[in-house]
Each structure stands twice: as C-alpha cells, then as structure tokens.
Image (cartoon, rainbow, N blue to C red; front, top):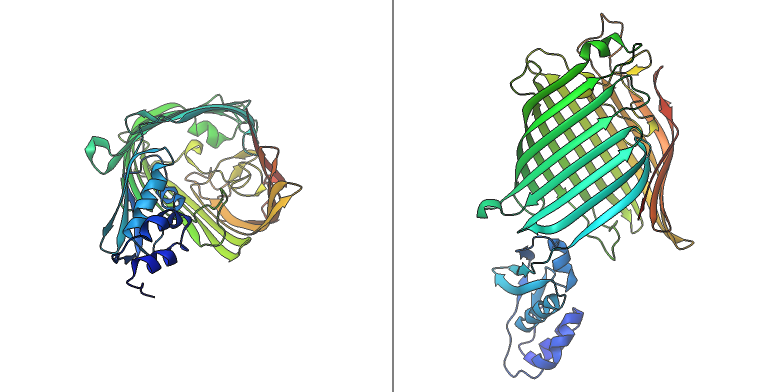
Length: 445
C-alpha cells in the first residue's frame, strides 16, 4: 500500500514497523514537507570483517521489503553506532538495494579456553585454545592443543581478509598430530602446513585454493599385524600437495541465540586434494559433505546428511591404510570407531571409497527442569569398501551396506553441553565392531 503524501501521518504509520522508528517520530511528525520513500528489496552489508553481516542487519531492524524514510535510515545508523563496535555507519540506497556500510572499531577481541572433553572417537581429551580477532591488521589468529591417552594434536591458524588489498582472503594452517589407538596395530604421525587463498563469490559461496607440504608416517607395527599393514608401513612420505575447495550454504539465522528451525537451510562442501606430488605415491583424494534442514513445524525439523569420499593412486600406485577412510562412532552411529570396512583378522584396513547418508527427525522440547532439551530418531546407512591389494583375494573388500537405527539426545548439564545417542545396527557384516552407545561432552574452565 503506498504512503499518504503527508509527512506527519505517514511517519506516525511508519512507527509501527520497528522500535527504531519510534525514536524518529517526534522529529518527523513536525516536518511540514512530504518525505519520499522506496521499497528496498534487498539489504547488503559492506565492510564487515569480524561481525557477521546477518547480525548487523538484524540488530537494528534493517529488513528487505520495507519502504524506509530517510529519517528511519538515520535512526538505524544511530542505533548501530550506539552498539559501540563501529567507527562509522552509513545507510544508502542503490536502486532497490539498501546498503549498510560499516567501519568496525580496531578492537582485538579474543579468548583463552581450557576444556576437558569425552567423545566416542578419541576418549577423554584435554584441550587448550587461544584465539584473537585483529591479531594483526584484519587478521584472525588461533592456536589449539589437544592431548589424550591415544591422541595428541596441535594446530595454528591465521586468516587475513582482503589480502593484497583485493577481494581475496589469505589463510595459513599448520597441523600436527600423533595417533596410537589401542585397536590399531601401528602408530601414525603427521605434520602439515598449508597456505591458501579464499574468494567469496557471494555471502553464501566461497572458493579456496591452497598449496601445502605434508609429512606423514606409519610405524611401530605389532608383530601380529596384517601382512598388508606390514607392506604399507613407511618411515615417512614428505611432499607438497594442492587443495581445491568449494563452500556453499544457506543458513537459518539464529533467534535469541538459538537455531531457527522454521526455515530451510543447507550446507555443501567439496574438497579435492592432490597428495604426494613429485613422489612415487601420488594420490587423488576427493571429499564431499552436505547437510540439509527441512522445517516441519516451529519446533520440529527433518535433518538430512550425506558424506562421501574416494582416494586412489594416480600413477598405478596403491593407497596405504593411513590414506584410506574409517567411518564409525559419531560418523556412523551404531558402529565403533574404525568399525566397518575391509578387515584382515582384527585389523581394520580402511576403504578407498565410502558413502554414508543419514536422516533424522528432531524435536526441540524447550526447557525441561530449566535445561534446554532436544531429541530425535535417526537412520544411518552406507558402506566402506575397495582395496588395491586384497592379498590374493583373501580380504573381502567388496561393497556391503551397513545400516543402523537409533535415538539421539542433546541437553545441558549446568553449562556443559551433552550429546548422546543409542543405536543398533540392523544391517552389518561379520567382523564389524559395534558401538551401541555414544557420548560427547565438553566442560570449559
């Protein structure tokens, strides 16, 4: 409906749109000349570095589909400036687009976290992390250390926006880890460093390209280990690699700090690695993941997930166990970590290829005894298969579908989030390692 060309009347009507407009009513109502307006079909944010653009849009009520008056735009500017996190804010019209241009204060928010966690995959793990925004100009930095009986990991990340004064962002990752699981017959170590560029095609789509160097090794084998593991053992493969990545998502904005279950949302990622360049063991490694949310009601949603991966030698070379995939535990509920796929006796060998799909009906029950509580029922199904060497056909590496059914629960104990599931396989193979119960919790200090 068009506005009446009388400034006093139209401004009084506009005051019902947002609380911000109320602040402008007293000024605008005294105006004696008409104020023209135009419906803005989209709202974009420019200049945001650390604060999510969606948060900036929603904080002071800048929404598409509203015919804002100039006085209302100025009120939104004042509201955003009052948050104390911007050096400047300007709202302008570009056709049917409302543009919010911000300059964030040169602040350096950061935090240090110490936590104790338990997850089905790694057992009890302690961690210490540090992160800071604007560690350097437009640069985010983070350090994370994890230590457990079977797993030790560490990582360093730096990410600079608008590197080289262009639309490209620049990132650097350094990761090191050691794994010595008690259900494996070997020790695995890796050190990896990567520099990458990220290009945001839009607010929802990002391309990445990285060049890195990796050293990884498989050693200290048990005398009773599989002959195939003995053949694949290595004291170290050190070589450069290349990674290409794509990220795309349509997220449901949070309301009052909680996920919005009323909107359809999805996330898709694709990574392509070319490992061990320039060696006798070059590999192609492709990984795909997708998650979708379908709203059924305000407090009920249907979740769908799909994960897949494939690794192969590109010069006729075989893959190694440390190159292959091991779904299980939280990544395939109802089965133990490394619980499915080709095996030689008790040794899990991993698979060159895996696929897994899951569907879960989840309901938010709100607070029960003052504790946020949600629960769901799910089905996981998929397979892990294919080896380059089956030791003359003595190892079964063919496709065998596995499926499980279960119940998941997420709640808080004090300030500690707890996630658990109970699952039972209804399609499985001899030799599979099952895990009916899975638990994940993290306590921060």
